[in-house]
Image 1 (cartoon, rainbow, N blue to C red):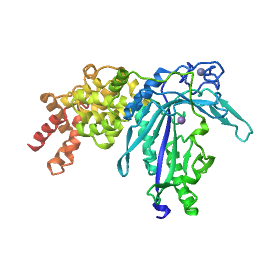
Image 2: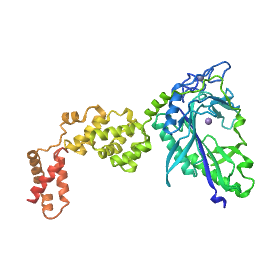
Image 3: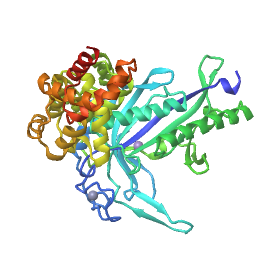
Image 4: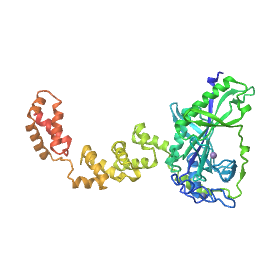
Length: 490
Ligand code: ZN
Ligand code: MN
């Protein structure tokens, strides 16, 4: 086997800030733009004698995510102290879950260029975040902001089922979509609400006993974008291949164990932080201040019932049930609000394709122009459905609907029927009235009419256009077409 054949074996640890108002074990607010060290109290500062109290909402969100991943919710989950000494951690330990996490097992399907792949989940647990260190540019000091200390964190750990940088990225994206969809985390990368730690090694085949051999496991800490995950994984795979080529006997997991590495985004390289790191270095021990989490089974089942249809499944259903193209189905299931809005409009209008066209075009454009989300959009799905129905029935044509009625619905919040009535926008379908307009148009455009009769078929479109214009855009196009055909052909 040559180094190029060694299969990368990658597991990911992903941390997400839970969408709670307050911290994990105290009542301090979770705020990202507050003055440094202004959202702190004795509990999150780790003062002696304080008692942490578990945030119920954080547990609820964690359970929701675990259920959506298909994890088993533990009957007994406990809190442990993970010790390490660092300036961003005032207690010198992080409250986490070690050997009895909240959720065990599960899986997540990801889409890659090679098709759908299933990544198994090892565990889902709750913990608290540390503070933030800022190193002075060119200076010899650092400053610490403890506002983030104690922010509820959900950690999802995958099996080493990921084999490429593309899959690592797809896994991160799928996890993000799920967490955002469920309202579990905002997953805002800029705010550091989602961070990735890939564990990378290469499988070197098997030894004499048939046991698989690996290169050392490199854990890359704190990646905060999909791009950096992809780049760091690619870099590490190449680095491992080089190392194992240079020292095939020595560069093994057995000899070197696990190491922790940082990522330098500017240089595009990883660098060694700590080698030979083991769980026992953290001196895990049960936290005596916190009662274990022993969920009521009935409550867990109630929570399970509230887990909605997941985005990937819904996307496939939109394609199958509503005949949507892949792309449209992806856009319309990007979050739950959008998917719910679409589905309500599709059902109420009885025209899923039209509902999709409206949302993908006019509606998204209106949201972008106003820089608002669907939740704040004044036109509700029922009103959009009504507009679609008015167009389908022929009360107004598509142009009037898009150019006049829809903008006015956004502006005034009035129903489409009311706007059509007040502004006299209903299509003219009265053949007698339209005939008079057609006659005027033909008289005023005798040359074009003669061209048409002389064989210039394109002239028909111009006469259609002139008639629509003369009617103020309100003529029923089908009736105009019939009238023109009759008069010109006769
Ligand atoms: Zn606090
Ligand atoms: Mn962690």
